Image 1: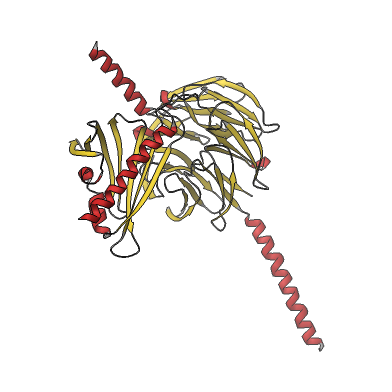
Image 2: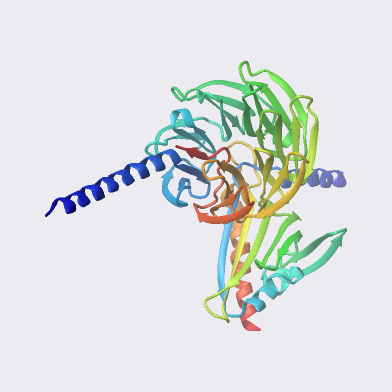
Length: 322
Length: 173
C-alpha cells in the first residue's frame, strides 16, 4: 500500500466520521415528538412517534382512560381512568406506568400549571376540582365547582383555572392560587372542551354546534357556528381548530375575522386535537375509526391516518416533544 | 292525574336522553354481502327503507320537519322509535343518523353505516357503527338495567340483527 492510497482511506474514514457526527447533531437539534393517545375501549395508551408516524408502544393503564396531561418539566404523563376511578402515572423516559393513584371519583379533564408542580383535575361525580401534586402524587386540595365539570384549562397570564360545567351551560373561572370563584359565564348548550390563550377562552358548545370565544379583558363573547357536535377547540397562532365529532371533520377559525374558513375531513368521530409544533402538524384523535389524523397547518390538508387503539380520545394536550 | 304522570315521565325521559355519563359505548360490526357496491349502497342510503331489511322494524314513515328528515319506526313489538337523518356522503358511501325519541335502555344514540368495495365486483362490505351511553349518569352503584352492559347488549342486538337482515335482503333479490 502506497502513501496516496493510505491517505485516501484516511480521508474517507474522516469524512464518514464527520458525516456521522453531523447527522447525530442534526437529529438531536431536530428532536422528536410523540402523541400519547388514550384508548378508552381497550384500557391502553398508544405512543405514536410523530417523526416516522408509527405506533411506538402500547401501555396498559386503568379502566376507560380518557383525560391526559403531559408534564414536560418532569417527563411525565398523567392519565385519568374514568371507570377504575384512578390515575396512571407514565414515565415518558421509559414509557411505563410507574404509579397508580386511587381517587374515588371519575377524573375527566386534566390541566397542569405552567411549572408542572400541580395538575388540576375535574371530578365528574363529585362536582369538584382536585389539585394533584406531582411531587408525591397526593391530592393536596379539592374545591367545589358547578355540576358535571368537564373540560379544564390553565391561563398562565392571569393565573386562573377555567372549567366547563356541562349540564349548567356555564364556564367557571377560579383563582389558581386560592381557588376562589372569579366569574361564571353563560355559554351555549352542553359546553365540553375548553382551552385558553393569553387573551381568550375557547369553548365547544356541543348541542348548539357552535363555539364561544370569550375575551378575557372585557368578557365579551363571540359565538361562531361550526360543524356537527363540536367536542373540543384549541387555538394556535392566528387560528382556532374545532373537532366536530358528528361531522367527521374539523373547523378552522380565522381569529382575525372570527369566521370559519375551512372544514377538513378527519377519521370518524374526531374528539380531541393537539399541535405537534415540531412538525407543524395538528393531530386529531378519532373515536370512531380508532385512529389519529395528521393535518398540515400550512396547507390545512389532512396528511395521514394512523391506527391507534379502540375508541381513541386523548382529552387534553397530548403531545410530548423531546 | 294520569296526564300529570305522563307529563312527568316525559320530562324525566327527555332528561335521560340529553344527559349522560362520561364513557360513550361503541358497537361496530361488519358484514360482507355478495352484491355490487352500487346495489348495497342503494339500499343502505335509503333512509325510509329500514323496514325492508331490519327484522325488528315493521313499518317506516318518513316525516319532514322544516329542513330536517325523520323516520318513525313501528317495531315488531308495537313500540315506536323516532330517528333523525344527519348526513349522507356519496363519495365515502356513508350515512349518519341518531335516535331522537323512543323507549330504549340507552341514550345519545348516534350511528353511521359505511359501504366499501369487497374482494371483487360482486362483493361489498357494510360496516355499522353506533355510539351511545348508558341511561344512568350518576356515580356507582348503578341500578340494574341502566348500566353500560345493558345498553351495550341492547345495541349489539339491534346491530347484529340489522346486518344479518341487510345480508339476507340484499342477497335474496
